[in-house]
Image (cartoon, rainbow, N blue to C red; front, top):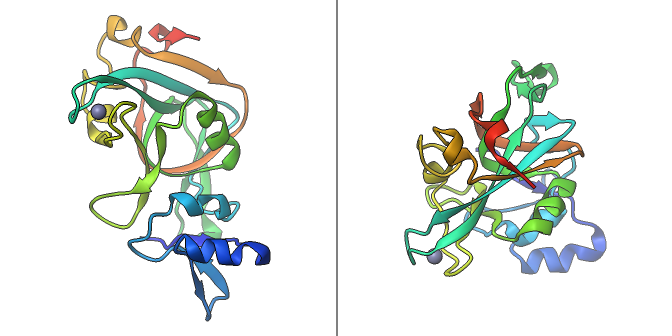
Length: 206
Ligand SMILES: [Zn+2]
């Protein structure tokens, strides 16, 4: 698990400390310690850190999904990277990492990091898809939150179960998904990439 380091300007150091950031005296940098909610600290994320995917454009998806807590159908969001996006392949050491071009679109999940321009674009649509700590470990992932009760949606239920959420099996199911094409660059990091997004063309353009 990689520690999340921060770039905190001198004037912000007290605010960052209040939100739980700590100073590493040996490496002279701020970081998010284990168990601290990273979401208020993401504004100080290091540029270029935790990026393993990039693209010249991307798609934002939105659909309705029943909340397992309150039972109501909440809006939920996802991101698809188009054909031609690039994935960082890890080399022996960080300097030998290479970028590999993908020849299929990919639905990404367990997103750990988004470039701030991408975050801002998503926030235009909704504040429901946002980072929080996972329940299993200290990694910070982006999760969908129920718009009625605030509960967190399970990533597998939305992205990893054929026939549910964004993993659709028919054109009819796909039509329930709204898709916005964003003509701006994407940079971010995710732990899971589902290649060959079925029925992307059958989704409803907005
Ligand atoms: Zn709910």
